[in-house]
Image (cartoon, rainbow, N blue to C red; front, top):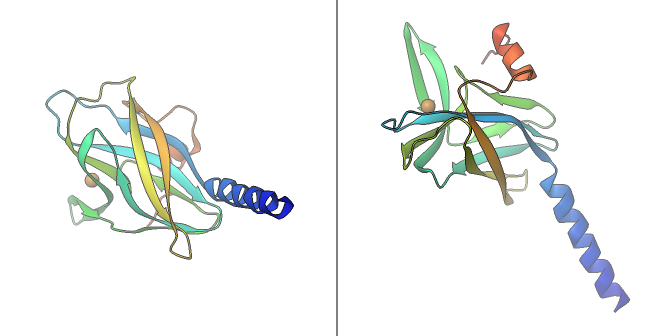
Length: 159
Ligand SMILES: [Cu+2]
Protein backbone atom coordinates (compact mmCIF):
# COMPACT_ATOMS: atom_id res chain seq x y z
CA UNK A 1 0.00 0.00 0.00
CA UNK A 2 2.74 2.38 0.94
CA UNK A 3 4.73 1.50 -2.18
CA UNK A 4 1.72 2.06 -4.42
CA UNK A 5 1.15 5.54 -3.08
CA UNK A 6 4.79 6.39 -3.53
CA UNK A 7 4.70 5.33 -7.19
CA UNK A 8 1.60 7.33 -7.87
CA UNK A 9 3.04 10.53 -6.43
CA UNK A 10 6.26 10.04 -8.38
CA UNK A 11 4.35 9.73 -11.62
CA UNK A 12 2.40 12.84 -10.79
CA UNK A 13 5.62 14.73 -10.14
CA UNK A 14 7.01 13.62 -13.50
CA UNK A 15 4.04 14.70 -15.56
CA UNK A 16 3.90 18.04 -13.75
CA UNK A 17 7.57 18.63 -14.43
CA UNK A 18 7.15 17.69 -18.05
CA UNK A 19 4.28 20.10 -18.57
CA UNK A 20 6.45 22.95 -17.36
CA UNK A 21 9.42 22.36 -19.64
CA UNK A 22 7.87 24.18 -22.58
CA UNK A 23 6.71 27.72 -22.04
CA UNK A 24 4.68 29.82 -24.47
CA UNK A 25 4.71 33.59 -24.01
CA UNK A 26 3.43 36.68 -25.78
CA UNK A 27 1.10 34.68 -28.01
CA UNK A 28 -1.31 36.50 -30.33
CA UNK A 29 -3.32 35.85 -33.46
CA UNK A 30 -3.73 38.54 -36.10
CA UNK A 31 -7.36 39.62 -36.34
CA UNK A 32 -9.20 38.94 -39.62
CA UNK A 33 -12.01 40.51 -41.57
CA UNK A 34 -15.04 38.22 -42.19
CA UNK A 35 -14.09 37.14 -45.74
CA UNK A 36 -10.48 36.37 -44.84
CA UNK A 37 -9.49 32.71 -44.99
CA UNK A 38 -6.06 32.78 -43.43
CA UNK A 39 -4.06 34.50 -40.72
CA UNK A 40 -0.99 34.07 -38.56
CA UNK A 41 -0.40 33.21 -34.92
CA UNK A 42 2.74 34.39 -33.19
CA UNK A 43 4.41 33.50 -29.89
CA UNK A 44 7.68 32.94 -28.09
CA UNK A 45 8.39 29.32 -27.19
CA UNK A 46 11.03 28.22 -24.72
CA UNK A 47 11.74 24.53 -24.18
CA UNK A 48 13.90 24.22 -21.09
CA UNK A 49 15.11 20.72 -22.00
CA UNK A 50 14.79 21.07 -25.76
CA UNK A 51 11.86 19.82 -27.84
CA UNK A 52 10.45 19.88 -31.35
CA UNK A 53 7.20 21.40 -32.43
CA UNK A 54 5.73 18.79 -34.76
CA UNK A 55 2.23 20.12 -35.28
CA UNK A 56 -0.41 22.65 -34.36
CA UNK A 57 -4.17 22.41 -34.55
CA UNK A 58 -7.09 24.68 -33.80
CA UNK A 59 -10.87 24.28 -33.96
CA UNK A 60 -11.16 27.60 -35.86
CA UNK A 61 -9.00 26.51 -38.82
CA UNK A 62 -9.23 23.58 -41.24
CA UNK A 63 -5.48 23.57 -41.82
CA UNK A 64 -2.74 24.73 -39.46
CA UNK A 65 0.93 24.74 -40.45
CA UNK A 66 4.12 26.17 -39.06
CA UNK A 67 5.64 28.47 -41.69
CA UNK A 68 8.88 30.26 -42.21
CA UNK A 69 9.04 33.51 -44.15
CA UNK A 70 12.11 34.51 -46.10
CA UNK A 71 13.07 36.99 -48.75
CA UNK A 72 13.77 35.31 -52.09
CA UNK A 73 15.14 38.21 -54.14
CA UNK A 74 12.38 40.80 -53.89
CA UNK A 75 9.70 38.30 -53.07
CA UNK A 76 8.67 37.31 -49.57
CA UNK A 77 8.05 33.57 -49.60
CA UNK A 78 6.44 31.33 -47.03
CA UNK A 79 7.25 27.67 -46.70
CA UNK A 80 5.91 25.00 -44.39
CA UNK A 81 8.19 23.83 -41.62
CA UNK A 82 7.13 20.28 -40.70
CA UNK A 83 9.32 20.25 -37.60
CA UNK A 84 10.42 23.32 -35.68
CA UNK A 85 13.40 22.63 -33.45
CA UNK A 86 13.26 24.19 -30.00
CA UNK A 87 16.85 24.11 -28.68
CA UNK A 88 17.17 23.68 -24.92
CA UNK A 89 16.85 26.94 -23.04
CA UNK A 90 16.65 29.08 -26.18
CA UNK A 91 13.55 31.11 -26.89
CA UNK A 92 12.28 30.62 -30.42
CA UNK A 93 10.34 33.64 -31.62
CA UNK A 94 7.41 33.22 -33.96
CA UNK A 95 6.65 36.69 -35.26
CA UNK A 96 5.60 38.62 -38.35
CA UNK A 97 8.26 38.29 -41.06
CA UNK A 98 9.67 35.04 -39.65
CA UNK A 99 8.33 31.83 -38.21
CA UNK A 100 4.60 31.81 -37.67
CA UNK A 101 1.73 29.45 -37.17
CA UNK A 102 -0.42 29.72 -40.28
CA UNK A 103 -4.13 29.29 -39.73
CA UNK A 104 -5.81 28.45 -43.05
CA UNK A 105 -9.28 27.52 -44.19
CA UNK A 106 -10.70 29.60 -41.33
CA UNK A 107 -14.19 28.55 -40.27
CA UNK A 108 -15.06 31.94 -38.81
CA UNK A 109 -13.87 35.53 -38.63
CA UNK A 110 -11.47 36.26 -35.82
CA UNK A 111 -12.35 39.68 -34.42
CA UNK A 112 -9.98 41.60 -32.19
CA UNK A 113 -10.63 40.77 -28.55
CA UNK A 114 -11.69 37.16 -29.15
CA UNK A 115 -9.62 34.11 -28.22
CA UNK A 116 -8.33 31.24 -30.34
CA UNK A 117 -7.52 27.85 -28.79
CA UNK A 118 -4.36 26.27 -30.18
CA UNK A 119 -2.99 22.81 -29.47
CA UNK A 120 0.77 22.49 -29.88
CA UNK A 121 2.11 18.98 -30.47
CA UNK A 122 5.58 18.67 -28.99
CA UNK A 123 8.15 15.91 -29.00
CA UNK A 124 10.88 15.63 -26.41
CA UNK A 125 14.39 14.26 -27.09
CA UNK A 126 13.11 10.71 -26.57
CA UNK A 127 10.36 11.22 -29.12
CA UNK A 128 7.61 11.26 -26.50
CA UNK A 129 4.76 13.42 -27.72
CA UNK A 130 2.89 15.83 -25.49
CA UNK A 131 0.18 18.36 -26.23
CA UNK A 132 0.18 21.89 -24.97
CA UNK A 133 -3.09 23.78 -25.03
CA UNK A 134 -2.83 27.54 -25.30
CA UNK A 135 -5.56 30.12 -25.40
CA UNK A 136 -4.38 32.90 -27.69
CA UNK A 137 -5.81 36.42 -27.76
CA UNK A 138 -6.75 37.92 -31.14
CA UNK A 139 -5.20 41.32 -31.75
CA UNK A 140 -4.15 43.69 -34.52
CA UNK A 141 -0.60 43.98 -33.17
CA UNK A 142 1.86 42.18 -30.88
CA UNK A 143 1.11 42.53 -27.17
CA UNK A 144 2.50 45.82 -25.86
CA UNK A 145 5.72 45.85 -23.88
CA UNK A 146 6.96 42.41 -24.87
CA UNK A 147 10.61 41.81 -25.68
CA UNK A 148 9.78 39.99 -28.93
CA UNK A 149 8.58 43.20 -30.50
CA UNK A 150 11.68 45.08 -29.43
CA UNK A 151 13.99 42.48 -30.99
CA UNK A 152 12.06 42.77 -34.26
CA UNK A 153 12.42 46.56 -34.29
CA UNK A 154 16.16 46.26 -34.08
CA UNK A 155 16.37 43.64 -36.79
CA UNK A 156 18.04 41.21 -34.43
CA UNK A 157 16.23 38.25 -35.94
CA UNK A 158 18.47 36.29 -38.26
CA UNK A 159 18.15 32.86 -39.77
CU1 LIG B 1 2.38 31.46 -43.59
